[in-house]
Structures are given as C-alpha cells and as structure tokens.
Length: 178
Image 1 (tube, rainbow, N blue to C red):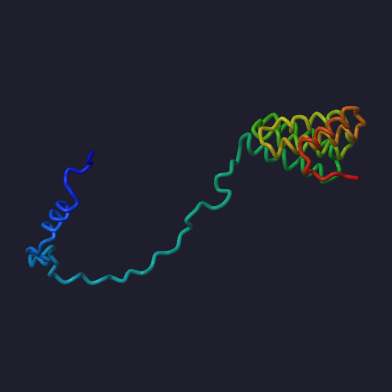
Image 2: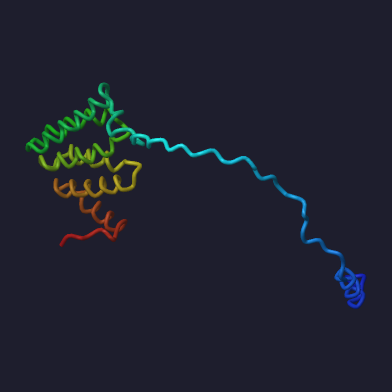
C-alpha cells in the first residue's frame, strides 16, 4: 500500500519544474513612503521644571483622631510602663488594644505574655501565650506555643513536660537547653 500517489522520480521532476529559472523582481522603483519636505521647527529651550516629590511625605495620612490614634497611644503607654519596670500595668494596658484591634490581637497577646512573664509566670501569662498560639500566622503561633511551654514549666504545671516533649517531636530543629 502506497502512502504517496507519486514515485520519487516523478516528485523530483515536479520540484525541478518549480525551481526553473524565471523572471524575478527584487526592486520596485515606486516610493514606499512620503518624506516631509518642510524644514523642522526650531527647538525651544525652556528652563527646567522645579523638582517635586514623587511620593507623599511620610506620615501625611496618619490619623489625627479616632480609634487608631488611641490604639497607638495605648501601645506607647504600655511600652513606657514596661520600660519603667511595671510589666503588670503594661499587660493591662495591652488588653484594651487587643479588644480595639482584633486583627493584631495575636501579636498583642505575644507582647502581653512577655510582660506577664516578666512580672512572674502565672495562669494569666499562660493564657496570653495560649491566645497567641491560636494565631493564623505560623510564626506567631509557634512563638505562642514555645512561650506556653515555657510558662507551663515555670509554673510547675504537670502538663509542661508532656507539652515540651510534644514540641520537641514537632520541631526537632529547635535548640535544646541542657
């Protein structure tokens, strides 16, 4: 069964017939486009423009009133109290921020837990670590879990050793204290 209806010899004859020399036009003398004949206008030399900022000045759109400003002030006050050696008062100040801004409650819980641990580990410190542990962000949740284990061990909670073993199994790359 043949696939092609022509033999190789007849195919060669057909190709040679197309390849015979013929008349070819390589240049067409007709213009392809029209060039302007009028002279170009002279270029005017205008003085350069004065430079302007391409972006808005930093802090231009920060709120001057409202809940965000109050939240910033409360956070600054909490950090001032912590620096002044009053971590328990700082932790209480952070609770207002956590209620006002639920989007950052997990990060505020981390800071509150650190302040409560500085004041002395107790059930409130462990509860703050647990709130941070519920974060949708993996890094915040891991810090919350590590802090919770630290708090359980510091308060001599019987679940602390089991939680530490579970943490080490889940994250073997964490450093182990002697």
